[in-house]
Each structure stands twice: as structure tokens, then as C-alpha cells.
Image 1 (tube, rainbow, N blue to C red):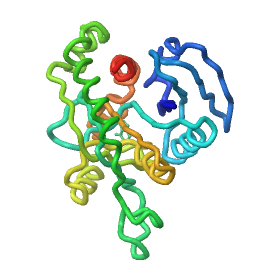
Image 2: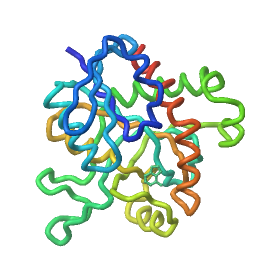
Image 3: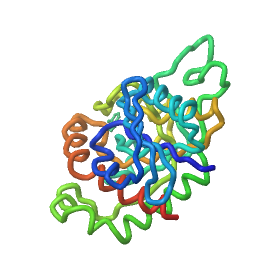
Image 4: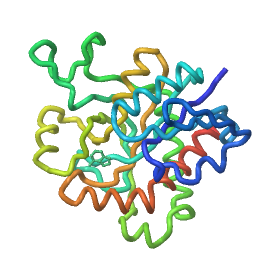
Length: 250
Ligand code: ADE
């Protein structure tokens, strides 16, 4: 039977979500609280992983091994890595790469030894479901969930959804030179964050379908930490809740 694992790196990305979880049971494993229950009709386990690849990988391993989840979705924010993207745009990963993995010359740069690959593909089906839910949210529900003041402040007017490559590493990127170097090696890169590719690697090992959805909170430049802070406090959770509600209903 279907059981969805829902992962958030930070509390700000899921604020208010657990109020919608019914028949909740709380389980403590490895200093994390896993909340199992029914979310908008879907059997689900929700958890805050914390930031970074190790935190995400160990959390997802517990979701799979202890809770037997059959699919995993992460919702959160990311730094934009393409000039076509603005704050508030949504990137749904079609593939993920660990930009700080480099065992060259033993293995090609970015390759995860033993897996034989550097890019891990997400589930087409889950990603498409997220895409439809995100379209619905942006077209029909944005105005009711995000205040006019926030829409003005973050210029959330013609928000777009793209599917593309997301890179993860244990590093908050706030330097356009660092971003440009990454972009040179990965020209199709759309967003940078700190968990997605770790989840992808674990899900690949266990053959569990997964999807990663990220809202752009900053442009990975020298203003990134300020933009990021404002965005996660004011907008990030509204995106997560609005889109995941529709995702579960479909
Ligand atoms: N998450 C959100 N913005 C980010 C950035 N600039 N670098 C890494 N992770 C992020």
C-alpha cells in the first residue's frame, strides 16, 4: 500500500503542515520526530531532516527502512542558478547531482562511486503530479495564500515552473563566482540547494521513487542570505502547503 514520505529541511518550509495531519503518531528516531498519519487523505510520514546531505540521507533511510514509505517528496527552497529564473519561480528536479562530490582521478568528477553515475533521475510520475499541483496553486490559489504585501515585496507576478537539473552540496552558495564555476561545468543547472541529491542517491539504492520541488528564494549571490531569510519566513511554507495539498488530492 502507498505511504508517502514527506521531507523538509527546515521548519520554515513546512510551517502549519502538521496541523493538517490526522491520526498522528510521533516516533523519535536519531534525534528526529517522524509524524505518521493521514495528510489530505494520503497515508504519510512527515519529518524535518535538518540541513545538509548527511541529515537528508539518514532521515530518508529511516523513512524507507523503519516506516516503509513507498515514495518520497521533498519541498523547500533553493538558490536560482539560471538567468531565466526569479525569486518565487519553482524548479522541479528531473535529475540531481552532488556538486561537492569529487573523487577525481579515481572516479570522474561528480560521479558517486559504486553507483556509476553522477546524475540521479527523479520519478517522472511524481514530478508531473507536482507540476500539475504547482500550476494549479500558481494560477488559482496564490493570491489567497500569499499576502499582497509579500507578492509585491518578492515581485511574485509571472511565476514560472521549470523542470531541470538541481545540484546539492554542503554549502550555502552566496557568491556569483562560485555559481559561475558550477554553471560552466553544468550548463543546464537550474538551482542549488543542500539535500536533494543526497535523497536521490539513497532512493536510487533502495529503488524508491522520489521527487524534489524547490521554490527559488535567492539568486545565490551576495544578497542570498538576506533574501533567503525573508523568503523562508514569509512565503516558503505557503508554497509547500498549497502545492502539497493539491498534490495529495490528485
Ligand atoms: N537554499 C536556498 N538558497 C540556497 C543557496 N544559495 N545555496 C544553497 N542552498 C540554498
